[in-house]
Length: 310
Image (cartoon, rainbow, N blue to C red; front, side, top):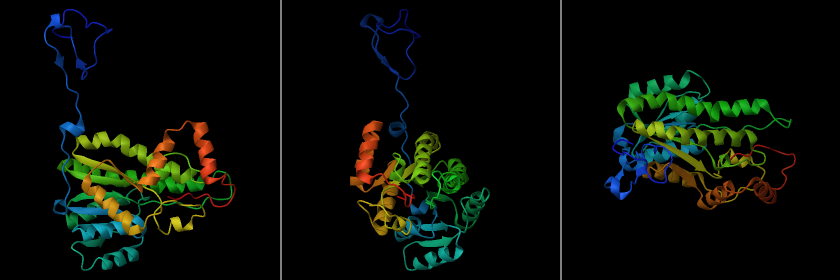
């Protein structure tokens, strides 16, 4: 270390940069090299409706539609994206009379070129996207085999690659402005492997990992990245499930919790709490204990549907 003629007592070799350095008294007063901590040194901006528009993918039904309406209730102009233009137009009409509004911008997250074109269209007409909720997701029925390759390809194309395409389309624009907020809808099903949810759960686990890794890069660009991990929400997707779904929450409650989470600004928006803490605890179990617990909670899950949508 510069300024020290002798090594620090008890330490072999140089200390890594950014760690506290405590030298013996005869070398002079102690010095501390402060590590960079984003949460302490960087105040992420609060995103408000006056900063721009909100963009919601997968907005034609379920959580996406409910969140779009909740944002409009709170004064946002919401650009709603999905494949079905007729459903988006119906959603836009349902927002009449609210403080904000919903505008339809049709697009398919699985189309390699669509998301960039959708974002360009939104910003050219309505102004900058300040908040993006990348919500589009599917849970297809598995085929008759043990491992349905087509189901994996389909679900990853939407639940993971679709998220990547949406994030890539909007993140560079936000970075150039030095401000923005992106939220990704994953699931508690991504915490650990669940019986019957191999494709769906793996795609959500990948989305969780993606957000954890991108968080650091986004912070440096002034972009707040958030992860949404809901449990069971009463939607058409979960209504197809044939297994018990504890602590189910209504669609309106889920939307309110998600939009409240946007305003609070923490990294993870997770609910309901009882199921969330159960799943977080399960992540800490060693494999033998985890597999035993899952067999007790869910049964052997032999045959039948293997969708596992959460």
